[in-house]
Image (cartoon, rainbow, N blue to C red):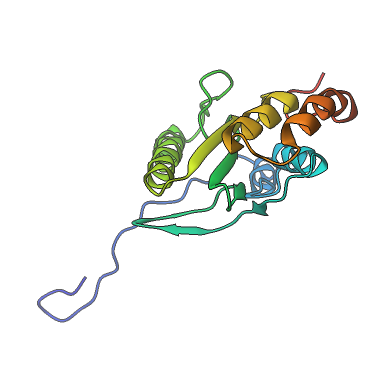
Length: 177
């Protein structure tokens, strides 16, 4: 900002919240944007079933740039594996007790961004699949196969046979225990 005298004053930016401890800071730094455990489990299951896809594929749509976790470009299906905390899951999402002035708006913006991405993808002719991280792996695979629609080569046969194997082989996306 330039004053009448010609001096320049920087714009005031709110302070970034300081972590309560070094451990909490390390924990938050370890969170990944891509290649999370639930996402990898879903990708492995889909790959074992013979599906081929793009991961973290950038789509430049009218007025929006979207990066689905998994994109089936030929079928125009975008798959997102949403974490319960970061995307405010109604069942498992928690609200932090500290720095609420920061986290409340941050999590609300994440949800708004998700809805805007869904709208942009739908307007561009894409089908959107959103899977929560707590959803069992076989349910997540079934949701993706359903969105891919009929005519997927071998998908129906492979899915019926392999979903039972996946549930026993892989701990899956859902909660451990």
